[in-house]
Length: 217
Image (cartoon, rainbow, N blue to C red; front, side, top):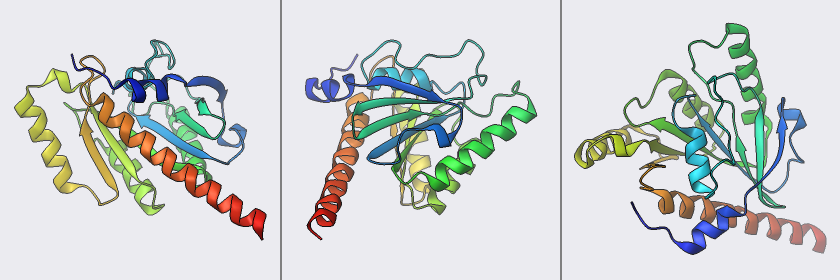
């Protein structure tokens, strides 16, 4: 079990549930900095989000994977949000529901200006499934960076996990980064927290500078 950086832990432990939105149009005002969390329904997305925010039940895992079709919004502060996207790729989800998911995601990823990063969770034993590839392609087209968490890294030996990581690194676009992650052992937890915090603070500073320029003019 790896130790945690207290400051990084405290930064994300502030996360609080704000609302669930059935459509992208019902999300909070499109301002500030937003990070989306995406992944297959069985990739450990809820566990990863709970671990990052040092809370046991911030993101609730559905008993029927793929059935929850809501955008769940959590606030770090008034200008920073985490958005837990509906899980995708679950075989038992009806085709109509999958179509609705695709339409909602198209709107969200193409129109949400405050969205600055997509965190994509993949089970390290089953990485880069077709839906993962499609999501990365959509983000790259929009110039939206992606950070991949290879979840459940504790399920593989250190050598095997490193091999999967290196293989993915070699084939990813420049705007896509990747790391090992385990909610259980806390492997990669602080690395992910630091990456997300730095990105949010960077974009928050940029937004404040832009607002100041507008006020002056």
